[in-house]
Image (tube, rainbow, N blue to C red):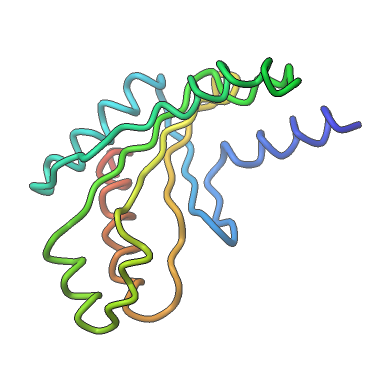
Length: 143
């Protein structure tokens, strides 16, 4: 029962979806193509990628040590970056918006279904960041 639930949940995530906590889009292509597209879209904005978290590799490596044989992702990376201009703008409105920085866009391959997404932000000035992230993702999707 648990496996069937997880399979259904993962399949739902691979389609264009707006979840409460994240926005996820299906990518028509390989994981490698998606990571290249995301990296290019971020760099095209004149931004620097601070770090790429290879979350899928970490989960695969640590699963057995934690007593789990669940294969969550074939691959999953998170691109971490910041925009000095946009961050300054939202932090001048509310300095505690520092809690939302840096920003991240993920690419995930779940059994051949590749998706790109990002965390949703609270209403108010952080919607400028969310819109910016969506623009980057749309560029990566070729939209």
